[in-house]
Image (cartoon, rainbow, N blue to C red; front, side):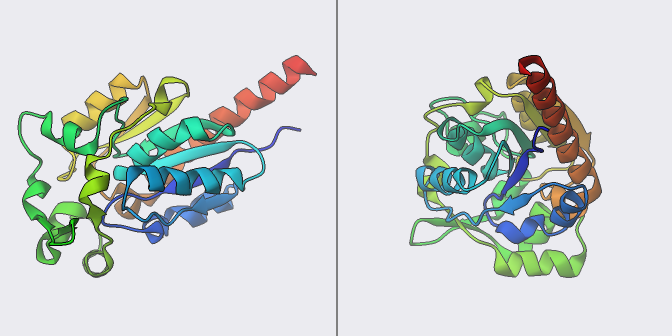
Length: 242
């Protein structure tokens, strides 16, 4: 009997693993083994290594799921993880080889509204102004929840923002992409462009950048759909070789 894929959740900038807090129970209830990483957000190379180690520790196939900058992380990490069989991008960056968040962010005709809320500190890290966090990162989340997210935000280093992908994992794996229609951190047209470029199965959700917080049911269903499709393909392949 083929094994269901493990689901490895990778958070992005200005967040941590708890950002998947509403999604994890729904995925677990569906019978999947779930792991969420805690990324340092200090360099793309180190963040990809964190994912590699997490994937290596899992028995069986792995589906990587990345939100925001987490999309760049899973793009870079995929070729390091022989047991990864698919990639899911949740309003995430999907860079090509040689691209960085900085390059992708500068390629659009206009900067996203949320860019005006980003504040660099003197140590080389980027923060979102706490007073502007809710309106730009998670404007459709519960107010108290949005306030907590602003308070506990984890900054992204400028080095990670500028880190260039060395291998685009989406070129060799089936991909899924969720576009957030009301995203103020990544322009929705840019998300649609990346989804098309990576030939992803795509859904559009009327959500903010933090879609897994405000629309956990939609995001969980999307991830489960990818996991089930991959599981079916594993079973078919097993049958052929039986």
